[in-house]
Length: 84
Image 1 (cartoon, rainbow, N blue to C red):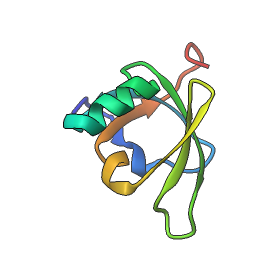
Image 2 (cartoon, helix red, strand yellow; image 1 turned 180 degrees about the vertical axis):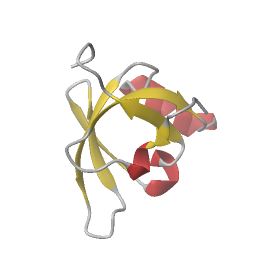
Image 3 (tube, rainbow, N blue to C red; image 1 turned 90 degrees about the vertical axis):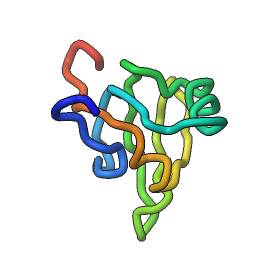
């Protein structure tokens, strides 16, 4: 894991973050990569269900819902002005 990176699951609605790494393996990793979950991609946290699982994220103008199981294995940092 990258220093100061946090799991995507811990981000709040409205946050803008940048992907640093993923520890997901197998078919789910390939699927997320195909959807744009690559290092350096900007994500916006759109909303979380009342219990927090699943949550909706926007990457490359696409809205994707992920469960805690997946989002806790994606590590992100806060987006700075150069990403926005």
